[in-house]
Amino acid sequence: MNRMDEAAKKLKIDWETYKTLRSPRTSLAVTFPIRMDNGSVEIFTGYRVLYNYVRGPSKGGVRYHPEVNLEEITALAAIMTLKCAVAEVPFGGAKGGVACDPSKMSINELERLTRRYTYMIMPLLGPDKDIPAPDVNTNQQTMAWMMDTYSMLAGYTVPGVVTGKPFQLGGSKGRGYATGRGVAFVTSEMLQRLNMPLKGATVAIQGFGNVGSNTARFLHQEGCKIVGVTDISGGLLNEGGLDIPALLKHVEDEKKISGFKDGEFITDYRRANERLLKSDVDILIPAALENQITEENALDVRAKVIVEGANGPITGTADKILSKKGTTVVPDIIANSGGVIVSYFEWVQDVQAYLWTEDQVNQRLKELITSAFTGVWDAAQEHKTDMRQAAYMEAVGKVVEVTRLRGIFP
Ligand code: GLU
Image (tube, rainbow, N blue to C red; front, side, top):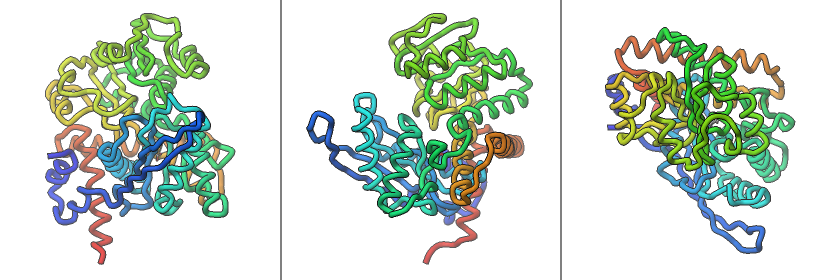
């Protein structure tokens, strides 16, 4: 039985209404040609899944990765539905992606791919319908191209159709850092509940993209000791604590952690990840792809707390092993919700054409994510369960309640 079904059973909610949440509402697969820089034509496949939109327009990122497929995108779109519900932002959940290897593509090829993909999924998009954002291997620039393509086809400028845009195009202050800032807030709340000091806590982070790097930035500012990080170029380990400001500067210039001289460097990223996931730390933060902690390695995890910066980094079986071992897991739908919370703020600013200051954004992010965390923590105590099941119960309960109130059409 999957996590959503388990939560619904435990809540004892009306199964007939809950059933509507077990499948995606709209799934679109598109295949399209792109002219490459060398003159050849390549065929790409992309997807956009709007999992559920009873609570509002669907919301979720777009990822570019060779392994993108419909099953993965659907699972991630379901996670977005629950994430928006726990955070109490008025959105449903969606996800999109294109199967491609962006590391082997030029900027011009990426622009053509983004524009054609946007065109292909255009019927689904709109500030009141479905609103993409960045995810794995996509960024502000990707969102600028999506926004421009949508606007050109609409005939007027529509900033609210995507979030995570550059500030000059209607992006929000603080959106770039938001997911990492949120992960840091949630980590701090969790440690307080466990009576563990944040200052001096040791941390290992898998992945050093937008989420991993900004999580390192904010946890370092809080006085944590980041003793290991990995990315696609390898792993950096230093028991004494890595120089995070210098590493962030290095990654800004080089786009990868390799070449940074501090501690031990492991060039093989698979081996680096294996070492990192098993490191003897207080906090482990998987902030890369899904299915990293599995039944194969869960028993070897030594961290006391795992905070899911990535979506779905722990498999269902691994979850059970960790729970038996007494490892505390802060699940993705609460841990990394800072990104979509500030996406909501960005959309509000766009549709009202009224900009907020960075302090307002950060303050409201803190309020929303802390209140979501507290809700989940309280539910976990009340139902005598772990944070994942509590978060799923909160989320499923909210979506099912709205479904019940709206009724079934026709
Ligand atoms: N891709 C991010 C996530 O998985 C952000 C989604 C959004 O802001 O819409 O939460």
